[in-house]
Length: 265
Image (tube, rainbow, N blue to C red; front, side, top):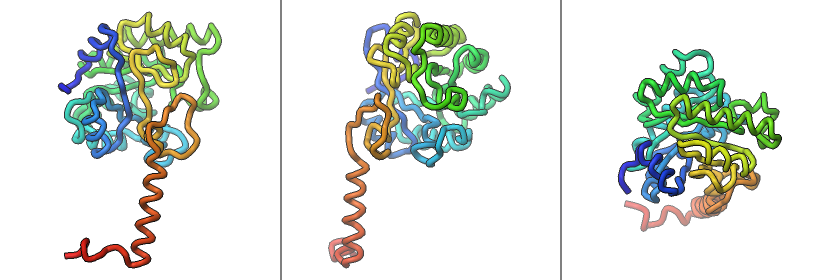
């Protein structure tokens, strides 16, 4: 696989080729996903929940995203690395948005950044894109707005709300985003947005008609326990595999079976 750029994603939409996206937070996982041919790795602020144990993504800092992005950028050869801009890094001012986007590129090694929100975020998207930093948008269910939304609930069920989300997506495209995540909306709405936009849409809990799909890698690999959202498909049960390996290790050490002569100098 050749090095993926934002230009390649635009071409994939044009040609009707689906875009697989997964989150990544560390060097080893990024290298495996890159070798598997995943074209886009998103260093999501979801790291706060699945890696650090926060209840929401809100406590995640720019420094934390930079740390994870550095590791992912070192692990991949070909995938496009997109870094989330965490809560508070772009909402307070346009200067903050520009400064923090630059940090994610210069210090983290990201090749693009992602911002949540629609029309209210468009000015920040425009400002960052004007610096030649590729920007991915994010509309629908936006986890950084969890308190306003009253939890992680499907958005856009009613026609008025659906029209607002469509307007949000159009505003983000007009502001210069190269792509947009659509999360937690009815499939019909995601299809309508995808048809209206000229930039690629990446769905998560938004049905099959987006130009691409993204999942949190910990969910996809079965590392996050039994409770996962409806839209998650588990491709492995690594939690159980790791559990069984760890219990066997404990048994071997306690019983004196490890280390043996084969594992000694």
